[in-house]
Image (tube, rainbow, N blue to C red; front, side, top):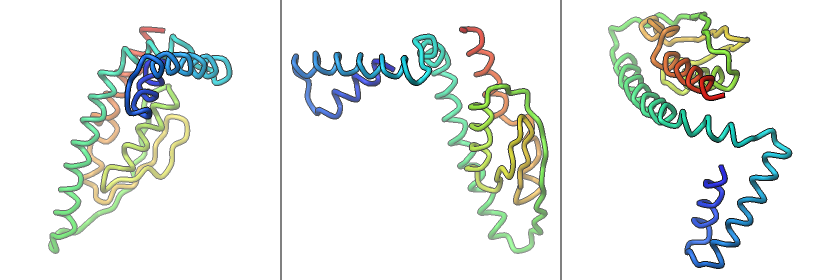
Length: 158
């Protein structure tokens, strides 16, 4: 986080000089100290995030790929007149314990065309799918698997 603050400082300044770098380091340290003291942050969290950053990038890639595929499937479904849509509500549970990762899963489902998370209570999801084909395998989707892998990797480094 400290490095990100410093990089943002340099980017916002538009140039790098010795004075800007020294002042940026001081400001970055002060902001980082404030966040650690008053916002329940710690260097351990930085290390955990750094260790799962590869998985986060993989998740972002998979999410974009799934959004693209769902867009194509939804467009085909909409423009095929003979196709009879069968909307369905799907309920499933995950083993993900982290609230942040459960919300990330709910949001990932919602931004993927053809599905929307209606409800998230604990680890129980209720998802509306535009068609029953979109609901197949949703409880064991690539999103769930990657988030479970992230959770395991994060726990290993606590």
